[in-house]
Length: 191
Image (cartoon, rainbow, N blue to C red):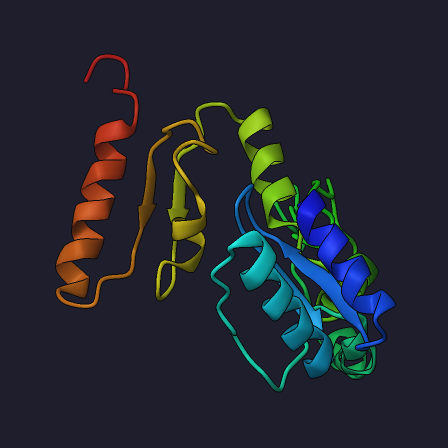
């Protein structure tokens, strides 16, 4: 992260435009976002001087960067009209990387609207979750195993982790995940 911060400062100093570290995903993965010229300059520098193999996610959408502030404001108006149920458990937004014990409607609106133009603190969220729940089992529900793949075993200390995505037998794979989770559950007394 420190090396990436130096690259960002160097690219900014060269006048290439807005460039920000917008996803702090894991100890080994971060995402840059900003103006195309700045991102291209950073990619060249990272490849040449740091031997990084970058992946361009989306060239036209500077998600999670300050360039998306107007999008967040437009989204805020729609979120204000949404009805959110009172959470039964603390809400752990990636915007903060720390739980909100009982989020209000206004907090949901603010956090979700800001989410599109401020950094994602996924690593901080997972670190908090693991510290608060040492026996946590991590399950990604959704396509492509994006978050699952971020959970490097060195980082999450070899804890059980599963994903529900399968490109082949989705129903069979999901059933196997459920059975694995059942096997991890402590046996009920007397059964």
